[in-house]
Length: 175
Image 1 (cartoon, helix red, strand yellow):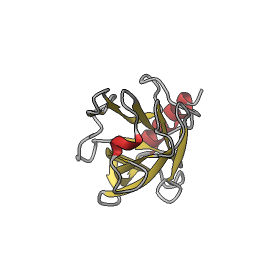
Image 2 (cartoon, helix red, strand yellow):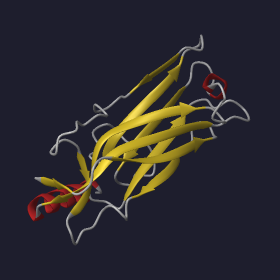
Image 3 (cartoon, one colour):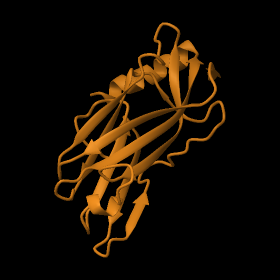
Image 4 (cartoon, rainbow, N blue to C red):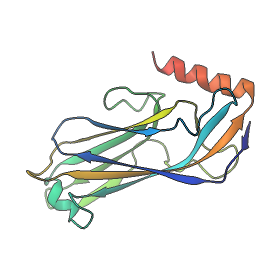
């Protein structure tokens, strides 16, 4: 199905959430990695999420109010906000909850965010951007919540049939 053109590498983007109950969106530019003419796609192997406070050395629990949550999703189409788990554009997602007692609980709430390391394992993306969307139900006053997303990926060449199938599925998911 896919022929690897590169070894695995990591793409990193940070999303800064400063308002409560408001979607915040950042993008990963994949224009250098995806090439329609060469049937070149990005193969995502795993996605990791790192939650931090206003600065790198802040206590995260100071930024997120007690009893509140942070939701984060990575999609290969721009939906303009958070999506249901049935949306084909959804690549990965996570949620972090802080209890009323201040205990933090993080979980990936969709797929296993680790797709495997084999040549056929992974999520193939043929779009030129990935979209990172986050929302918090309770950002403390004067604070921000920073979520860093690390996407482990490689560049692959697909057969013409496989590339078209993925492109058609992605286009159908856009409707």
